[in-house]
Length: 379
Image (cartoon, rainbow, N blue to C red; front, side, top):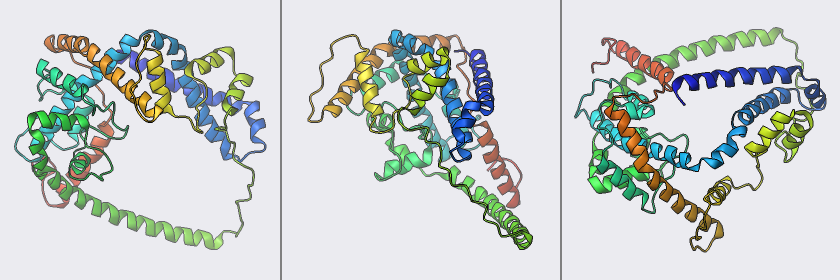
């Protein structure tokens, strides 16, 4: 999907979400349900249901198409692996830059690496993916340590936590398996020993900014406390928490299915079913279900890897199949990637950290100012 189509899709989601919420707010059916439930249940349910319905309408109709386009799924997965190759290069560059062994025109602060993480294929100061890079990654895929994906909050350029994970097995996150494999082949684990000179400088300025912020916050809280004391002196002592009705338990098994089948139109009911129906919370093993579905869609007999636990046997079999399919798709993904690189065509740009970057940048500039230095990044 190109940027224009993605933008149009985002606008559609936002408008559809608002439309559904407004319909639910005016619904007499919802009001009837809420008569015997805690009032706040209504807002919580509307938010949850509207978001889910947008998802069903957007993706439910495509579910069967996805099942018929498995090759495209693996090609897209292979493109993600090309990005992982580049993430390791960027992380190595970050280690060098933080140790002040190199300078980079596009990098002024450590937070800038987060931007290039999101736009890794457009990163101008690392070499493009080479055939040697591809061969090394395929070798990594053939090992038993292949990591399908990181936890959704873990980032490839999270320098501090990744370095902590390298030095401490009890760290909150893991050291990426791809980084470990790459280091074992290149000897670049030595980069993990470099000092974080630049990071320490930024912390110094941010601490000055933080202390000023704490002082201002403390003063504001003191004023607010005084205002509350005055207000409480004149306010009547009335217990306002008289509500005793229960919350609506819309996550109860079967409840969402009943609601959709009873009150939704045919289009929504079909989208709901194609998407997979209601979420299953109790003993539902999503990890196992995904692996079983993956193997079922393969269209061939796949021998199950022998293991003492049948679930683990399924996971290992699915992992092997997954790695084989990615290896098959990588040459095509690489060929498409090289066409874009050779023709100097930009890849999709994501501005997901711009707001955070502005906040971080201002904290450094203010810290510099508090230390009697110019408001710039020349330090």
